[in-house]
Length: 194
Image (cartoon, rainbow, N blue to C red; front, side):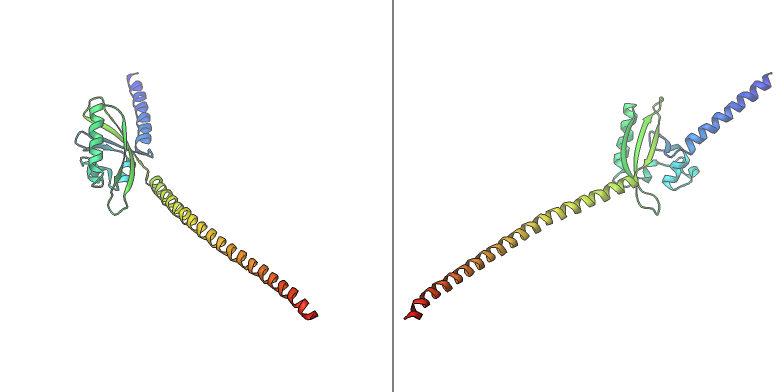
């Protein structure tokens, strides 16, 4: 009876371990466990893929080594805040990986109950950030186009006004020419009679 209970407990434990592995290792988000000095104590497969290094080679290394020089102080301050407040917090930083372009990451972290480690969830937002940058660039181009369009409209209006003035002057000249022709005709008539 004890053996049957042990087998059942072992089977339940294996099932639970399988679920945990599926949830932790194959999650679409990188999970890290960091200590107070940013040393990685645990990492899932997605996190290792984000950093571009095997999971076994990541354990014991500083997480801060993977950040861009300007992002590391921001992350260090963020992690200090997480440990100090014992609450959940988030930030966005730039990560550099070997041979790849920089990755933009959204990081959420919460300190564990002991206060010696924290759990970190890392989401790759590179595509979103690149799309935002492209959108910003397109908006800038559109604003430039709008401002140049305003200038071109003003120039075109000035040109049309100038052409209208020329047409008005030509019309006046034509009317004056007609009037002079009529006057000359009126003068010629009595002269012809004489």
